[in-house]
Length: 198
Image 1 (tube, rainbow, N blue to C red):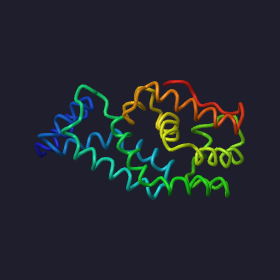
Image 2: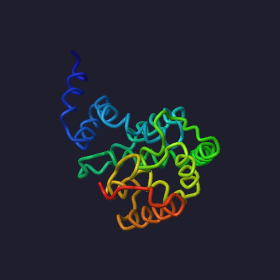
Image 3: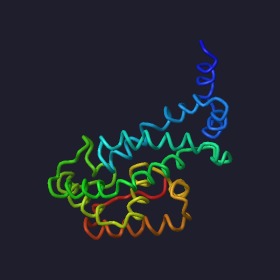
Image 4: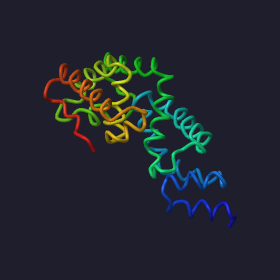
């Protein structure tokens, strides 16, 4: 067994920050972060842009993270918010495609993914009808509010993690999430349940 393989296996027990620090001298060990978070980032990107674009977003996210790893704040033991921040910035480049996807879902009711949109954001509703209405509301949200809402609801980041991912204050996260909740409830009523802080 090669030294790199042994090093990679040993990194599996390290914190994210320790993996990143280790990857500065053993670049292959960075793959541990992909093993930990690749699927999560893919699900999040697929919900926002569709499965096909998600592959590119995941690849670009981890490539950018690898290139930027020397500047990572090693005082932060968990890299998840950092990776979601990179992914969200990359998704911003595809914003028009994301909005077209939501508008198509609103018109057709056909979710491009097997899991209905409503399961992640709206509970106690008729999924087929509510997916269409919810897609229209999400498409109409300001991009900043949409990023906060979807990082919270789909990526399941807490307020602090969303703040770290987007490099904004926690108070801004709270106000953007509240604004998004109000807009969704204004259209969907009390059937909406976007949880409290994780």
